[in-house]
Length: 226
Image (cartoon, rainbow, N blue to C red; front, top):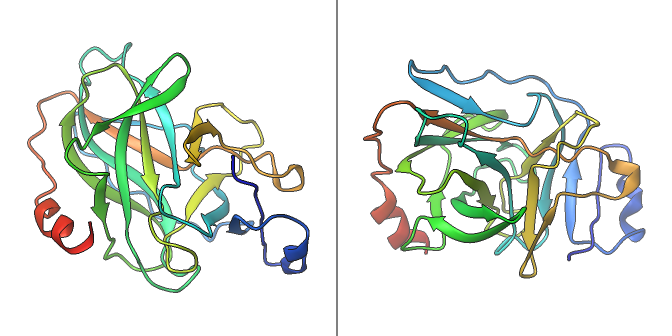
């Protein structure tokens, strides 16, 4: 497990207090516009829509964060249309750097092996939207072979050349958010003085019909970045 370190606007002097494995920015949220929803889709989420912290690992490669979901009660919503990820491009380096997304199995109460994509470590995506606080939609176009899964995002690049994660301001941890580092998945956790805000702002949009959307830039992106 990685040790944790948080920096906020008002607590930057805390740098010597903890082993420095990640940084965070907050609190507060200037507000963001939600993307429109298409007919026949359903959004799966655990966050309340209001950011508390943006955070990033100092070492990004191999560091994932995401949420588990279960489709067992949604008999008609079987196709994964997109991952919806809340992030920002104006912190920490005022630009988009890109990240990977992937789906993992979820059994026995813990995330497991990667389900999608099968031919690479993850699907690379670099936003081209304005660089403020924003929801980013990543088209998937895939039907998950299992009811339960984890949708996750890998930071990929080291701080400050990275796009941050976010957790909401709900003080109740719903116990569906996970982070992966050092070879282990664990529930999201921060030092007590910065908790208890642990619900990752990452959602999944599912469809009640067959999805034909595919990430058409996957081959080009793989050649450039993997």
